[in-house]
Image (cartoon, rainbow, N blue to C red; front, side, top):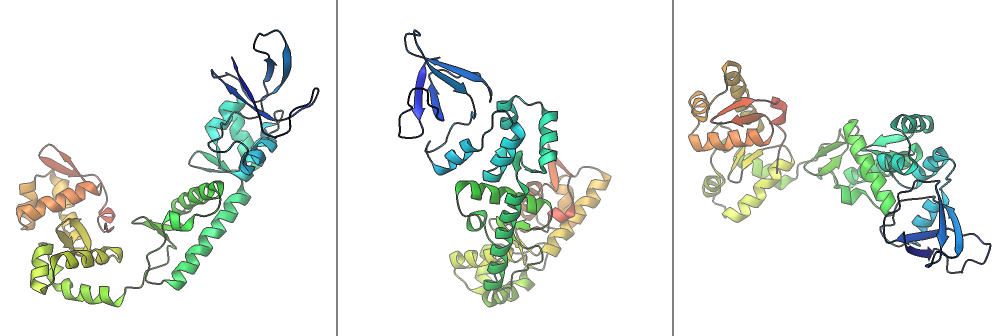
Length: 330
């Protein structure tokens, strides 16, 4: 394959000298780490040099960045375990890609990962020290945020993750691992300590006190009707009502209707009882609940969206758990 030698250092390579270089080829080279490559001139009449392949990951930004040089310096083409140990300290390592580049069988890679005690998160390999530091950063940021902003439900991933691209990648993977392990809570796009409950601001408390009695029904009025009863401009009232979902005070089942969580769970349990007999229709649910058809359709479509019910033709069946219903959606 024809190609070009791209220097990583500005100084030229003297005859007999050595250097780490990039090869940019016109066609892909089917090589693995450790393979030997011979370089010849354009006419194939003269051997220019040769070397061994130490890395197959193409840079996604500057070839000469410090991160790239650190990665290349970590490569030991005769020792995949040492290389993996060093690389996992720099950035998350994609497991299948590493195995393919080193021509490792899955069992061999698994043995190396176990020996090095690497963390495996979403198909990536990370050194435990790196995960530990990322976890400390995440916990500290959340603890500070909860203390300074007790009424906030938490922070987004973008607000938590900082630093270099590699550091942010490690922190995002660590967030997913902490949520999966139950050490963090993730709701409505925000992360929080599982014990944290956002303090409800006074204006949200007043709003809830005004609408609670009106919403305390399996057939609550629409947003438009609520706005008229409370004599509030609809656009303003619609924005204010969204705050109730952030504090688990109400559940938004459609663009025009909110339910109290207990009342919605009441309807979900009714669906469960109907389902125990057979898949049910909209009409059967309407007759059993005493709720108007339009509201029934909104509720059942919400149940479908939460994965609690599944529509099959003109009937529905319960496929989830009632706990899925009480999770608010903004």
